[in-house]
Length: 312
Figure 1 (cartoon, rainbow, N blue to C red):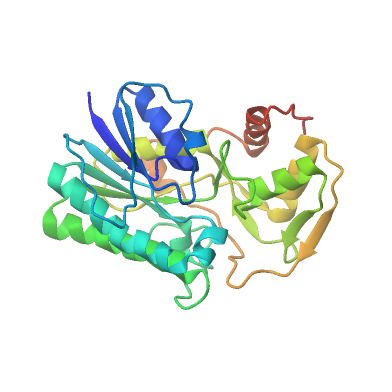
Figure 2 (cartoon, helix red, strand yellow):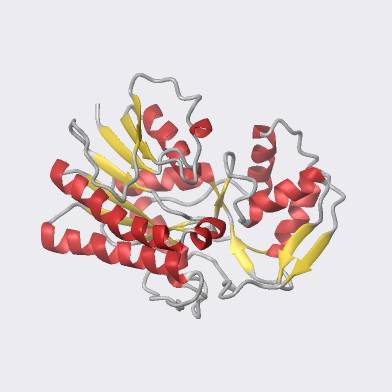
């Protein structure tokens, strides 16, 4: 039985990954300090091959058993979190990644770094291929997250080239699904919460900025395919279908049947105007592409909340 370590394993993506790996026959060691996650995300997992370790990855990571793969997902991914704890966000991206890489090296394990589309910043190339170096403001408010992930990528590649560590890097685009925190500041859970509570849906700017939304099941499938491949260079994983935030808000209203109005607020500093993955490499290297459309994914989120979708 292979053993996987998942840092950030009690978070939104991490908890889904833990479930998926257990279903594939892995023993799973979930590491999390619960700063931005919850035991509620993993309390339903009742498996003898699942272990939870309460630990902050900025400190040395010790695992007293063999490990085959390390999935490093620990991060303060929500704008609310990394703006609230900018220094810790930088530490998780630097010290945390260094410690996770050190664990993988000591155990001679495959290492997957969960990077982000935010390494592209407010892109001047559209859609964004892995060859694009990005347009990032290092001293802006989003820089603590963007640059932490860019540094983490450089660190992973240095471990690969100098230490011979078996690494891979996934650049995750906007992902949504059950277990997202309703107040984490990201568009899908925010719009869903507001629609279900009958509150106005708040759209920043004019709502013409675009995002591409990938359902969590598709995303997790891509992560595992990459970890089990022999690829070392970055690979985008996300849904290439592009929506404006106005279109997202309107879709949420139709699916929920809400009568909430759409209101507009000032655009945050350095908010990207476009975001769309070029998934050519994912198709070629992994044979991966998303299967679940936005409407279906939103229906699944509602079902997980015990609500019946109205339809689109």
